[in-house]
Image 1 (cartoon, helix red, strand yellow):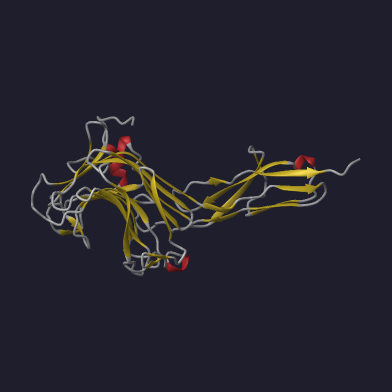
Image 2 (cartoon, rainbow, N blue to C red; image 1 turned 120 degrees about the horizontal axis):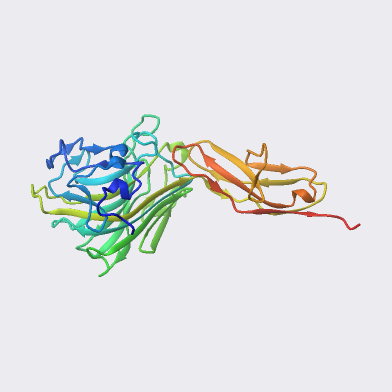
Length: 352
């Protein structure tokens, strides 16, 4: 794991695009709802740590949430949980289901609340408002660890504008136990939501209009205006505000990464053309913001002025034969660029 137990979490993990929500108000676990204490990305990177967010003896980023923890408004459960911010310090810029979005984590559940035995370890969550200022349904897709029932399941909200939840069990049986290693991935790639825990995977197409267990996948398209963000950590599912300091949920993370990029929906296709004719390459892509393109020749040479989704080579000759790729970028903050597969241009010459 290569984690240093002498360092705070923000020096073992890249937390530059995460803020932390704590189970306290004014530093105290009140057992009541309201505006909980939050720690901004800059403070996490600088080394923030306390009793509810700390480095474990093995270097793990450890979240502790007592049952009497304070709760955010609208929730009956306390949390010590990271909330993704594409722009550090700004909750208002989030991502749509278009493009490529991947959260990967490795963790262990060390303790669960004695009443429900449940803790949520990862989420894809809607903000309270849409970018246009209108109200959002605040839906979530999440991974729940359920110790009493020996299962790990996903809760899915298929309708972005309404509460329309169903559950899908990913793992069940004796392997669902405290201190067992859990590797999970939550991804949305051009509308396809995929959740995987220890290589057990299920997927739902949010843009399909498909009926899943009586719930319709809808209102996740561009017209809906719905956006989402990742969360990871310890969302204690207790319903018993016992005012105790020892009962609660504890989760330790050993890896946590996030990735965003445009999604290439149609790769450029290899061509074989006659010398003196034209060759046209095209790429299809989707993303969140404005997409930009840069075509490359043989992997090392940028093609001047080739900054559109279509590349046309006119009056081709032998010097144009070779490999073509295109780098697609999304101007949304903290998005990575993505490179297409290789399309080969073969130039045919008539016999002399």
